[in-house]
Length: 418
Image (cartoon, rainbow, N blue to C red):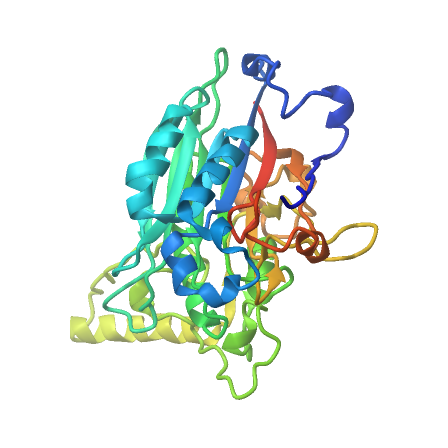
């Protein structure tokens, strides 16, 4: 039996002093946490490694003992982990459809979760699930996003996203809804053009779902396997809310690979106008130009207007989005500067999984012009520490006897101040 690695809770700010038993203590009545003025909830993001994908990519698991790779061994372990951490919201990736129906969903339902699932398109066997505790939330809406578009040659991959709007159940207060998104972006390191477009499609859907009557956004938690590393252009775009991609090689977008020799650079714009998503990553209102009272042929006027719009769009190599998103994890250990890893197998040990969240105003240095989209923010209370590559090889990498995916679960505890 290999050793188990201990992952500790890291408490952010001074919450440790305020409540020593904030997490992982079964004796605390969850109702005590939510008073009139605050709602605490935890979120896990976990790529659980679909069995079909494991078997199709067996070269990645040559370091593993055979028995630990069987689903009959892996699933009980994964379930035990989910049960142990007992998060209020689960965002799972690589959830295989047959296993979801027969084992995963029934098991999670018996633990008090309501489950929503979106399978990848094409003939792909897996998808993403968002599951939440009945006791903490009720469901307002389910919004699947398909990144495959038959009418757009660029978008020929079968990845998907899933966006839920959840209503916190609070005994004596009114609370905004919380928008939870989950995705697994394309892996292919050389197709940053597709990855960025898939991300834009997810952000547009989040915009539409999280939009409140007063024009602000409700709090957002965006989880998933983004197949991009910290500090890469795709990662920076999520965190900074802007990206100038002029001259950027498509293989450099995700930072997964060092070499980008002979690669083409991103076209401007990256995706065609008929996708219906603006460079600000929101759905465009397809406006029909008004016919002006002139002697000109009305269709001529329309054409000229469309051309002007398109040229302006084409010239700009700037992407933007209107959320103020922070990452739960900092990606490096503060004392040593050694990278954290979220996935580890024969080929690589890197961070590709994230939990992003809308930070409270004071959590983020505001950049000018971003005031428009300030909705309520979330306060990060705690996170489950990640590990280094070296830590993981001491237990023979992933999957192993105790950790049954090639990814680690990410786990955060948030507070919504009401």
